Length: 109
Image (cartoon, rainbow, N blue to C red; front, side, top):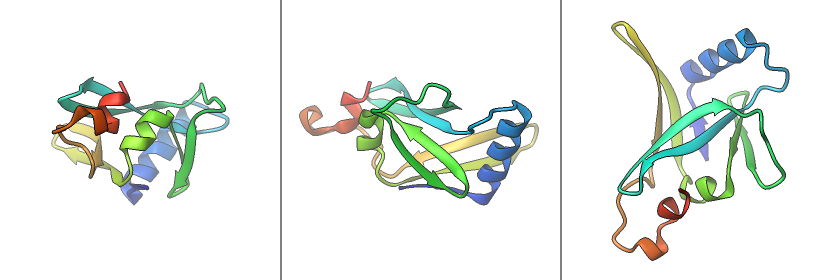
């Protein structure tokens, strides 16, 4: 389950409305290497029948099955630090693998 904080939900709703997205949804995807997994956000304008779709705090979240399998418990927050504004995506299951054959994160790339 991905929890979207109130701050992140407010910012995401504002951004999606500003862009005029008719059916707003965000996609969580993997970026980085298998030893340093990082997540990104994008407007989910390419939802397909295989995607895993959930909703939290009024935001529809879309992930590929591989990403969803490796992202079982996490959060999306929005922070303002001085002059920068960032979404912070945290996954409790993210880390390096001792056995890559059993690691969903490695398979998701």
